Length: 281
Ligand SMILES: [Zn+2]
Image (cartoon, rainbow, N blue to C red; front, side, top):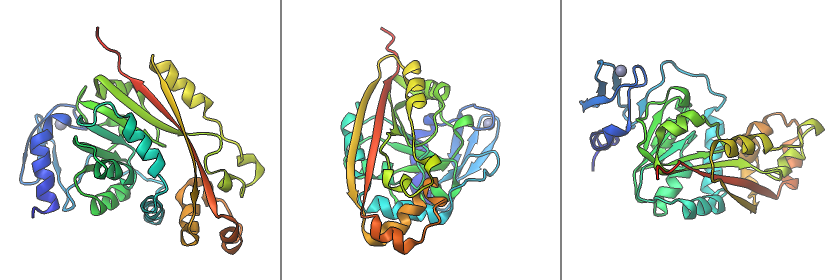
């Protein structure tokens, strides 16, 4: 069996046209000895885990390893399954190239791959910790650390841009998306994790996605919206992970014993926004 780093090299050899140099935005010319090189000679090494680090400098992320592990355990317990099944059913090009933008520890794209997504998946995040954990945990996805503001991806090569609970950059999305491609963005609805909000001070209890949705609708002409609402039975041993999972939980000072007895189920209330690139016809 190939080592992860060799597998990643083979992937890059086959898919080098999907990337570009994050320094000069030119195409990568070759991949040899676990190193990609652009036309201007900028070089980037594959890590042992088979990832690329394409940030100009390390970014400080609010995501700690503990938090990422909490997210991973919750994902493995099935927290996102109804959402991801819905997304899978909405993907128009299941054999095309999918880019997971802000993939965190990689659980979402890993689920899609395991459940029948046929095309190549490239997943990136600005958090190196997230990418390290993702690459250690999942096969058959190319993971890299990169910044959406200086993204190392070639223009108009991606059939699906997946953007789950993570910031967008629509001009960059336009550049990356293939003609006829889809942007699938997931944002919270009002009831999202309401049990967690209810544990907080009043000021933080309401959330509105109106501005985010408006911005999306301004940018894409034919927008489809799908709500996904379900209740997840939270196993007691995952309550602490749940509190750690989002910044919402970080400010809760109540004692865990009290929360553990109260928090039996959680509401997942999300809105999927689907935008498509303009057809030339
Ligand atoms: Zn370069």
